[in-house]
Length: 241
Image 1: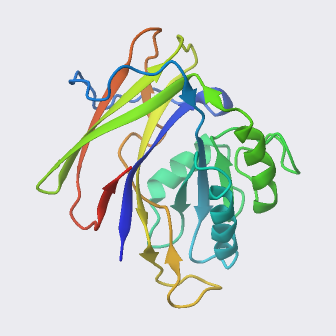
Image 2: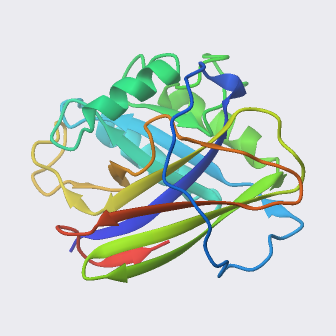
């Protein structure tokens, strides 16, 4: 049975990536249902894995990703397909440029930061053999300067959500927010090197923000809010995380 997990939230400091022009997004004022931001934020690690049914190595990548997720509950994942029926091609094309190139499959980026360990130093996306080394390095940092919270309301298959962004200090770097819709347990159509019942997990199905994220102004002592909406027609077992 299908499940989807609504919304991996990514707050990216773009000092490691190429510069794009700012793109306006939906936003505005809303009643705050999440309370005041905490004084300490727990570090989260986002793994964006690049995959495709046409590649026989991608099931191995999925198994490796599963092992990465088991290391720490603060590791989350989004599997970004290309070249198959699950691809969002314009998004992949934009992200491919933004990250400096996805030069093979499967590849993964961890918090969109350059590798500091292994054989692909300074690459933002890198191969399976370098995943664990770099993830363990990132997990050494237990706290971060900002955090995210989400409040959502569903009515007649329409979903509206408010994303709250809190931070300890003014952050002068150009900062963007990305909101993903992730679906779990998706039956493959033709995954090479796998049986006919192969299941995809953590599949990116929709990007609610602009492809390289929506700009966020981070000023000391204030909490930013972004508002997004979408229809949920065609999705099953709705579960907000």
